[in-house]
Every structure is written in structure tokens, then in C-alpha cells.
Image (cartoon, rainbow, N blue to C red; front, side):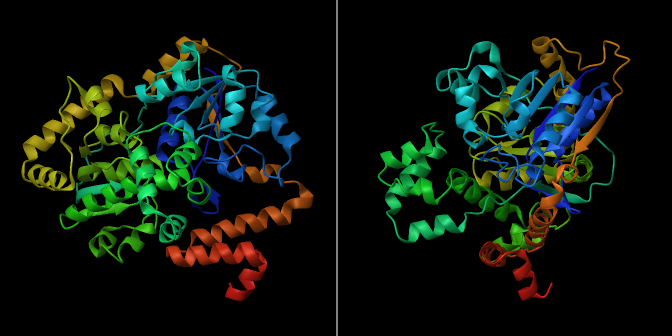
Length: 459
């Protein structure tokens, strides 16, 4: 039984608040089920740039009040995904701080600050390519690199499987900054940068663009946008080919915009909000096939959805991935494809062969029960930090539970109006479905302010 502070970014705004995603939802639930008490912070409420940004606390929030609450909680372990956590908190923590990879290091917050204090942190990196980067590029000590795989909280549920194929994810749409840049610059140089990123080149992005003769690319087009170019193309081609087979797509409303060019994808999109453990559990269990199309950065590892699907009654079909094959060896041969046409053929065969589909599902579930649950990860953490995360010690001073720390609790009274205006701006933007309209709205708010924009639109 331990006190754990957990912080992560979330892009999902629902019911006026940022929401925890399935992976974090499952992790927190498992911590509580094993007798721990958790302070759960969604950093998007506390930081202006919670992903690939900085850990500077929002100016509207009371730093002293927030720090006091965390100090009174006195965590025994801090877990910060992508180092997305207010710096004022980590500055005063006396416990171990674990930076857990949700993405590669290039998308962490405060990367330069981490480098300056590298000995302060432990790093959880599930896959060997990430560990090698930490060893060789950041010079992280071997005992500070924890090779811990993801876990899952999904359980099988024998519900009606009324979906042939489902996919939960985003389209990785290329942004306007990329399109604006290629209109007026050397496409050959841009292709060279994109190819290097596709191959997993770990050179610093600015240095890479300097090398290829397009140094201003790093200033005008973000690393995340460039790294997603192939991912977007691969995902669209794969989903487009199987969209006639009873596919249902879940995720952000950007899927509607794909309909301008691939209308069957837009027609396969279900606008239901999907982010929680329960949301994902219901979809995976009610699907005969659950598709995975990885991001290009998942070369040696695999997305979190892999274990979630394997734990359900849905049959995983995935793009070829070394990490998946290594994890499932001896339990199940997951059907994998290397092209959209192969994905199409696999899905067609599985839908016609229930016996084969069921064999894959049974093997997947056996693999998860043996080595894919969160309690297995907690045991690994216990051996490093010498704390009890699995409830084998009794601590009468701890009552298991979770508290989500909400930013509204720490708003400085004199800045209440500014905080609410920013919050309302986010909610207004999140309701807009069309990408071009969303872009115009953001520009309008940035140029004239939220209240003036609201008057103009008569909202």
C-alpha cells in the first residue's frame, strides 16, 4: 500500500473537463484495486503546453497552494508520463520520480531540464530502441532505465458481437503548416527529412533539417506533424480498403474531414465519445476483429491498444511489429500484415473462419493473463523502489482510493475570469467538427479575444 502521484496529458475535453484516457484509467484503477491511494493529475488543466511543451504552471493558478497539497500528500512514488507535470511540483518532491514513456523522448516536456538533472529521474521505457537512446544519447545510468511493458485493465465480456471490424484512433491528419510549407519550398529536402524520421533516425529535429538544407522547416512544421506523415497515409489506405467490410471507426471528429477524399471512411465513423476504460472495453468485446494500424514511431514496440484488444473477445489484426511477435511468442500467432491489401485479405479470411478467429482470441487472452496485467508491472516497480504496490504489506494509515486533482481548485481569485475565459475557449473550439472552421475559430480567438469572438458568432 503506497501513496502514488500520477500525472499525464489528455487531449480529450468532455463535459467541461479534461478526461483520463483508457490506459491511465486502467492503471489508476489497478493501483487502487491493489490497495494504493492515488493523486491523479491531468496535466492539460495545469500547463499551457502539456505535450511536447513546457512544465510552467498556468499563470492563473496558485503555485503555493498546489505545492502545499502535494507536500501534504507526501507521495512515495511519482509517475509522470512524458514528463508532463508542473515543474513546481517536481522541484519539491523528495520521492523517486519516474518518467514513463507514452511517446518517444522527443515529445517529452522540458527536455532540456531533464538533461540538466538526468540523475534525478528513472525512465520507464517498454522497448529496447528507446532504452538504447537513453543509454547512448542521454547517458542515463543502467539502473535508472526500467524496461517495463504496458499493462491492460480490459476484461473479456461475452456480449453480442455486432461489429465486424472496429478501429479506435486518430487519423494523424497532416496540418496546415505542413501544406503551407511544401507550397513554397524544396519538396526533395522535405522528403529526405520525412524519410529519416520514418526510418527512426534519432538525430535532433533541428539538426536534421539543417543537414538536409531546410533549416526553417523545424520552426514552421512541428516534429510531431512531420513524424505523422507516413502514419497518416498508412492508416488511411488500410482503413479505406476495409471500409466496405462492416468497419466502425471511433476517435476524434477529424474523421469526417477525411470524407472529402475517402467518403467510405467518413461513413464508417461513429461520433460516439470514446476514451475511458469502459468505452474501449465495450467496443472491443462487441467486435469480431479489432484492427491495429501503428504510428511509425512504434517500430520495435507496440501501441497500448494491442494488450487491450488481446484481453477482450475481439480478434487482433495488426501491422507487422517486432514487439508484438516477441510478446506473444509461445502463446498465439497474431495475424499481421505488411500492406493494406494484406490487411484486407486477412480480415476477409478471419470473418469467414470463426474457428480460427476463436483460436486467436483464446491464445491472446491466455498471454495477457500470464504476463499482461498491471499487477505484474507493479511487482517490477516494487523491486526497484522498495515500496508496496501490491498490498502485501499492511499500512493502517492508508485507505485505498483515488482523487483527481482539478485545476479549478487552485485558481487565484483575481484571475478567475481569465481562467474561465480560457476554459470556455477550449470548450468552444472542441465543439467544432470541420478542421478549416476550427482553424478559423482559433485564429479569431487569438486575434480578437474570446468574448469578442463569442459576440461576433452570437453564441
